[in-house]
Length: 216
Image (cartoon, rainbow, N blue to C red; front, side):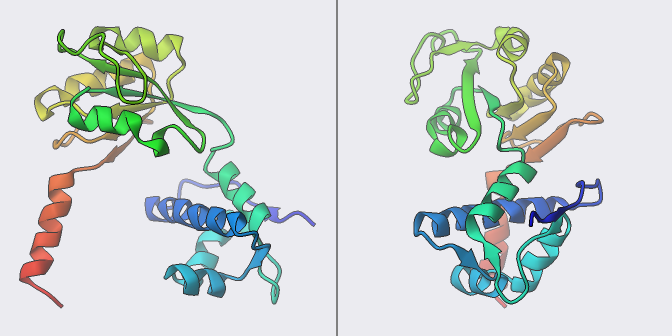
């Protein structure tokens, strides 16, 4: 019998969605090992997770698994792929072909599991025309809007200096991008209905530095 499904609501937290990605990753590991069923407790014990949290997170989206038996690994993996909308290709554009941008363009996680980088852009004439390690040719940043529309880009990745980040973000939104991953160390002025995730590496290092000074 298929699981009872619920339509995701706006009340689901970003943390819950992030944990779904973690569960999916571990289910893929179990499937590769040909494990057929797993309980929330087994999943928690093996991967150092919280079994109650797993059950609570999954309950936001429906009823999965059988009491006393557990979850079918393949079926739950497929459901999470559908919930995370990874059953459709998500095309990605990276703006900023510096060290970080070119490294990300070559990162396998950005080119597998439903994602595909379709363009890497930069405003530096000396970089335009060069090939990235992933095999893409760096294109002019002024073509951002055209590329977004013609290549049907879903997600924008910003890896430019902080002084240029807001302008790039504005151009992405104007071109129709509704999801942005921002690596620039600055807070962007956001737009309604556009989802932004900020990844500030310096902030994370400072967070760790705090705990080195103030250990628990």
